[in-house]
Amino acid sequence: MLVLWVIAFSILGSVGVILLVGMFLLFPEAVQDMLVPCLISYATGTLLAASLLGLIPHALEYSEPSLILSTVLAGIILFFLLEKLIIWRHCHDAECEVHSAAGPMIIIGDAFHNFVDGAIIAASFLSSITMGIAASLSVIIHEIAQEVGDFGILLHSGYTKKQALFWNLLSSIATLPASVLAFYTLKIIRAAIPYVMGISAASFLYIALADLSPELHRKVETKYAIRQFVLLLAGVATMAIFLRFHP
Image 1 (cartoon, rainbow, N blue to C red):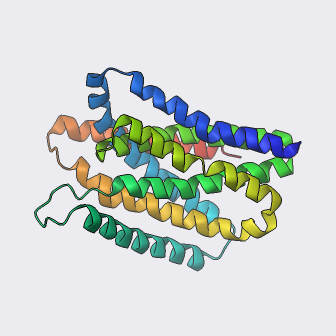
Image 2: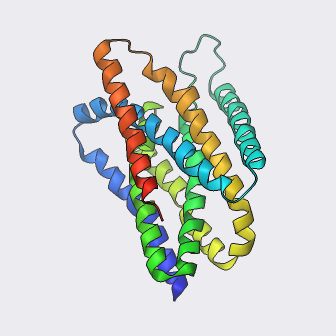
């Protein structure tokens, strides 16, 4: 019976969130075009805060700092190599100015993050149903903020709206098998969770600093700079508030 609670809230935390974010498609085309640059600024803030205020501090609670930080460093190097491979695969023109691998990177990083969320949901329900519901609701809330930003990143990277929705949904489904697996093998999975958090944090840091930040500097007008700065802070504040009340 308890596993049904885990499955139900895992589905709500993955598929339910994506369908909610997919309501973005209902906005008129002009509104969507205006919102995407704003989502990029907002996503930069949420990714930085999720990694530096959430994932890394939590991982440090369960393992040696040197091991976690080494994992983050290795993850950044890994994602650098991965981005190079993606660019090489899709663009052989030395003068090409697109070179955007943020889309595939965010899909991979989000899958790692959702794996952790699934394990958190399972572990919380094994503690108690009340704690499980509280943890699941918290996961759902912070996922809404993050997935909105991820959706904007995919659109900015050249994905169509349907493609962005599909790949966001695919990466989010990782929550469900992770929660079921963690429910039955928590003692084994628990040892890997801090390092999965470290890899996920590395992906978020790399995307925010290497892929998104340069895009924010393309427009130098004061009004754009102010808007970007305010939205970046809003992204940081959103994640900070959610993490502050996360069980």
